[in-house]
Image (tube, rainbow, N blue to C red; front, side, top):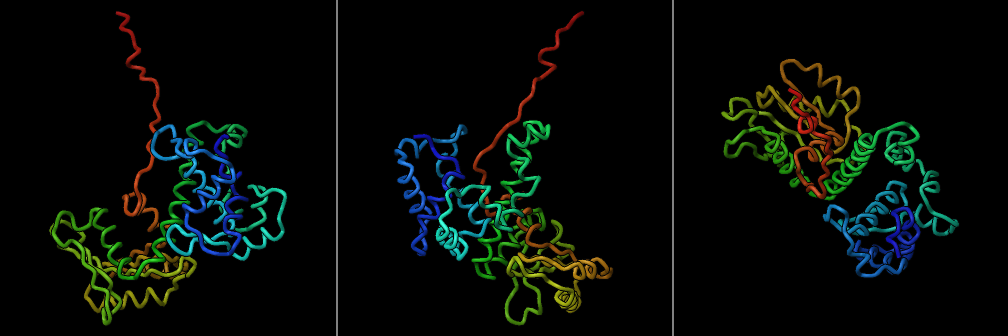
Length: 305
């Protein structure tokens, strides 16, 4: 039979987790393939680009949408389990579980914003969007999902890993240039709030002092934390500081940082961190590349002289 669409697999995915136990992604894929009686050849069928199996990709999107609705959670890498909401859905046993059904969950409605919904071909044709507009908006959705997944992975790791990751990101962005030991991690007991240092230029004339905090993505960092960081910078005689976190900053924290004149303070929240990791290919890899081509008018121009 044909490979089912991602939203046709919601029920099978939830049923696979119905026993309340954690299940690995391979178990889930095998279970869903059995429900839909997919052959080995169908499971192995690749995307037109040849980059990866169509079935695996669709199961991945099934997982993403159910997770956005709050019906499943990902306690560790490649492992899934039902949430209380997911158990309730199976208990209620609705006739159909599709995107319309998932709209009853606030987290899903926020994920499927009007801009994101426009990424579907039907919505695009109704709104007068071009195929290229559809592709651009689809990329926005993919990157938004990828950003969420990146932050979820980071939260599972140790603070020490996060500090080293931040230094690596900054060096990939060009800080420190080609200098050996362009950035170092110094975070430890008695570090006075400084977790790392990176050279701003190739010659190392300026140093940027870093505080890297791997906090819950829903946590809001207020002004007092930034005041403590500014105090730590003053203790180091530093003129430039970077506070980077997986959490978010309050308006008061941002305003306080902007008012600093003797010490330049830059705040990077979780959303910006994930965007930078995607932009500079840290913790991500390219799965597929699409090229948009157009007519080369010069090639078809005839010399009329």
